[in-house]
Length: 83
Image 1 (cartoon, rainbow, N blue to C red):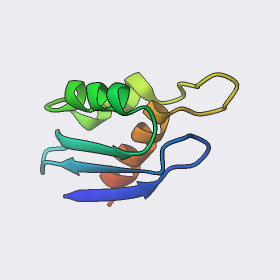
Image 2: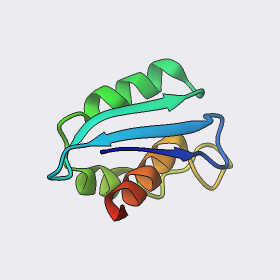
Image 3: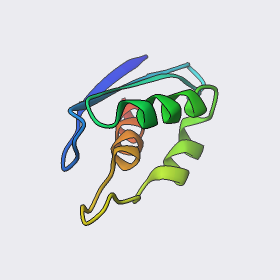
Image 4: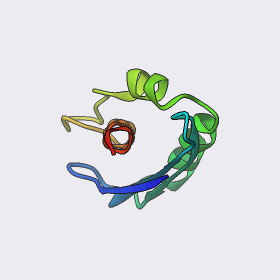
């Protein structure tokens, strides 16, 4: 299943996640933001259970912002699991 969410409060525009039927992350693509860092995060997330990724990234902030790109990925994963 592939799910896309518009990001809020960060430099990146949107996050697309692809999950296997068992909730394992198959792919993460973030449009905009810090390309190298986000490609690295996406690579590390492949094969990880979405729930584990959410626990690790949810609530992370970036500078003075109340959110971050990893937090936005976690929000996208949570919404995708609810579908």
